[in-house]
Length: 267
Image (tube, rainbow, N blue to C red):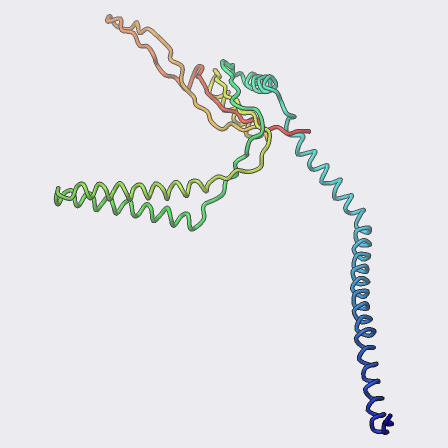
């Protein structure tokens, strides 16, 4: 067996050291660094959680005060609205309200009583105004051109009519698109819609309008005032003519159709 020379022994020694160092770095140092990074991240997360919990604990008194203030505000706002009423309850509420202002209910019908959307109105934007202006100008120009062509020749009447109807339809579609953006459905709440027919004077009905305008729990969405016809006989002169069906709004009783919306809340 041949002996190794010093040079070969030195090379083997260097190779052994290199292998030991390589495997030491790959199997010991690198895993240790990765473990250290994981532990460091966990420590940072735990520190952040600890600080967040400390801040939350310190903010508990102010949070409780804000909650109590919000509860008081909500309760005070709910105080202006009645609890959910049955149909009989709506009947009694609105009948008594009308009687308080010397208006006599004749007919009362409840259209709906339950959850419904409260519409929210949004203003027009500049784009909507521009679209409406464009639709108006096109309609005006079309009408002018149509009248000019009609007075000039009768051979193109059918074409002009078709063009006018088409552009009018497009303008109507633009207008409908703009109007559809006026209202959007809002949150749902308990709403009672009641239609009533009343009799009384205009002055008392105006007092009722003012009273309802100050209430947060109801609104009058529509009303119609019709004069009652009074028959009277004209005895002046010798003809003996009669005058009947005189409409009076300023004096005497009038017939009033009014629609109420009563807003209720669950308490």
